[in-house]
Length: 254
Image (cartoon, rainbow, N blue to C red; front, side):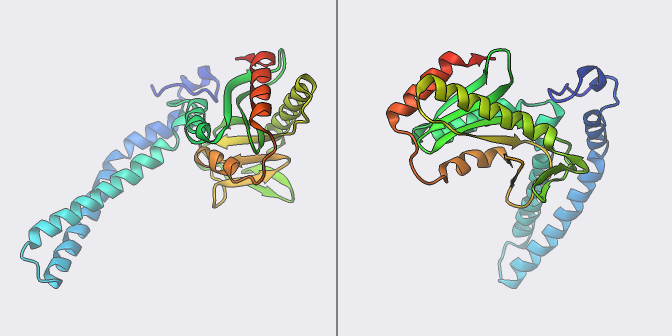
């Protein structure tokens, strides 16, 4: 039975009725068709490689044909592997917060940013990551939808296929405001926090970013890049240190 998912009810998962279970089932059953398709593509690559070798007068026609066939097969395998791996968080095979947290620390740490994972105001909503740095403060959560879910913004409203996105946007926006109020009160530094949602699976518009209802939805690999692209310096090193210490003290670790 495929592994459980942190984003769906586990009892449903193991009844074999969840979308994740069916996705993995069909993926495995389609393996033979994918192999056949790869053989055909490799065969075409073999012919093309041989013809190119003949065209340029090479003495190693079979060798270059085999090399081209191998490259075509390898690229086709990588594309299949990457498309399946892109659903790992949705399927429960990987944890989105671990992926995003690792990216944030690796890409922002040397630029003066502090990253705190798994924080909450006591007895209130929690977030996966709090990022504090020279250009501002962000709260970042992780979420994943089915691979065919189209995510977009129309007339200022978020949509996840035919569903409104308010149920995901409002809690995170409210949490960002609550965190900002707490940090402002405890440090005396005026704080505004921008909320982000790292989307691990689902169809975002070209560019991997969509914004609406006060929330930015973005591919995990682009989060750090977007933060670093913000112009200006909002906080000094001393303020960043004070805000990070205060957040670590006042926000409950979850």
